[in-house]
Image (cartoon, rainbow, N blue to C red; front, side, top):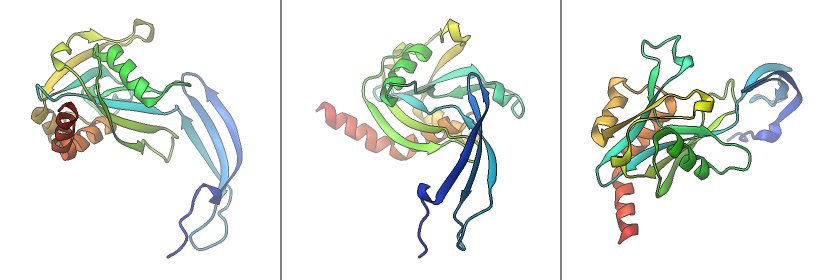
Length: 207
C-alpha cells in the first residue's frame, strides 16, 4: 500500500491577504506531492478563513424532544424558497474559548436554554475545497419545557425563533427536506443512530 500523505507533504509557498472583514479571505500558493511521485506545479487557491465553530442539538430525554432554532440565512437565498432555516444552536469559537463553552453560551443567547450534560458527536470539515472551517457537533441535555420565544443579540441583529419538536418528528425532517443545512442534518443523523445508547448512558449516569 502506498504511503498515506500528511501535512508534511504540502509546501506552502505564500499566503496573501485578499480581504479582512467579519471573515477573512486569503490566497494560498502551494504545491503538494503526487500519487505517482514527484511534486505538483504551483497551485493558487482563494481560501475563506472564518475560524472554527460548534453546533449543538439540545435534547430533553424526559420529554423526548429536541430544540431547533429558526433564523434567516442570506446564503440560502440563491437556492431556497424559504431562507429561514431550522438549525441547531451554533456559534464561532472565539480565541480563548473551548467548544463546550461556546455550546453553553450560544444555547443561552439563541434559545434561552441552560445545558446540563454535553456529549460530543463528531467533527467535520464544512467545505475543505474553499474554507478552513471545522465544525464540532455536540448533543446537549436540556429542559425543553423552557424552550420558547424569540432570542438573539440585538448587537448582531439576530432574530431567532425557538421551536420544540418530538424526537421522531425532528428525525423525519431529514427525510422530507424540512432541514437542509449540513450541521443540522448530520446532528440529526447521528442522533438517530445513537439515541438509544445515549439515553441509556445518561440514565446510567443518574443511577
